[in-house]
Length: 128
Length: 387
Image 1 (cartoon, each protein chain N blue to C red):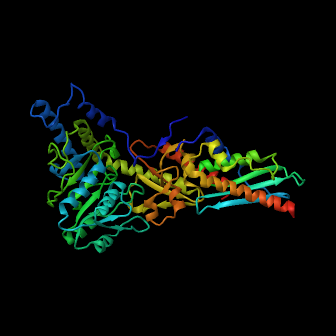
Image 2 (cartoon, chains in turn red, orange):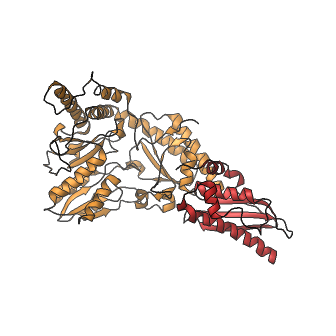
Image 3 (cartoon, one colour):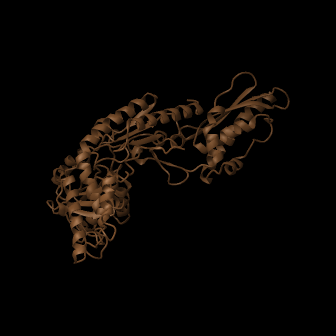
């Protein structure tokens, strides 16, 4: 399969953004499953203040190159954003950005779901 | 970017320069360009080249020259055999036995016959890929007219005991045995007569010959009859009409002649290389070998890698090595290998498999590079996956 230059770049460089975070104000969300072929997890460390600014992010993925690239890009783009804001990119936006075949839209929704789960954990903590 | 190391000889092989030289002699005005069917000296010369090649192929596989029917390749040979026998034998029965792990060139004709009202029993091999002849015996029915069992599996390299299966078919009496031997030549000895099967498909391009030519062996000793699939000219005993491509056939003859003389040495060398490859790959941990190691051709190694996604694995190793993956790209979303699934591998392990197939031009440094490339890719992907 041919991948776009952006997909190839983020797939090749994904290791640098992969991993987990620990410590205070760190929240985790995941979606999908290995058994189904796509699993994504995001870890977000946020500013404890009102803005909930994302200070650091990491991801883990068992997925195809398109989805790994998209998740890596989301991880990179997250830093500096407010966790309460919209995700850095929608599933459709990621599809267009990385020239991902439409057949993989379902997998991109898993990226979106994982992001939402991490944000929900973060915002749930804030509400509590 | 450097050219990836080619480890996909089971997909196709480069034409051996000695074969290319023989083919080149049949192309231009200075060479043997005539139509073998023409009744003049140019035709006679072409016919002599073709008959010499027929003898070379026959000798390499233990067949009689008259049993060799040249085709456009193994796919056509498989189709000619399956539809040819089915059409001829229809009054005797409409049941076929095939193995779940056959090549599509066998399975798709079987499925087409099913659509036309035939019944097909698909045998599931053991977990190591081997079909027990007793399975074939148990599947035979009074109306079985054809059994299809491949000699060497193209994905896992496992060798079937086709001689024992031929004996089972002979005992049955009415069932013809068709053997797809596209992967066998150059990798495993073929003796058509000793095996005792009725029909056998061969390919040239798997054994350093040209693409676009193959053969169907039709046993004369066993008085096999089949109907032609297309008509016009009556070449190849009326079974495969069409002007014979002299250069292709000459190339196939030379390729089979060379493979016969080189097979033993190449097999021994490939066995050492494969051992080196497996030693390197298995050091990663979480690597599962697919197929029966002791009962497979030395040129093929198929392995599944735990905790890595298949498409990502192929993409990560792709710049460094050319191998086949355990998934087919029918669309953007890949389908796991039906062969590995038939052996009991789950979808994820079937997808994360790689087939390494070694050949005449594979060297130790190629193996070492492959081990390095796969090790780096698997390690990286396992880290990304948190494994």
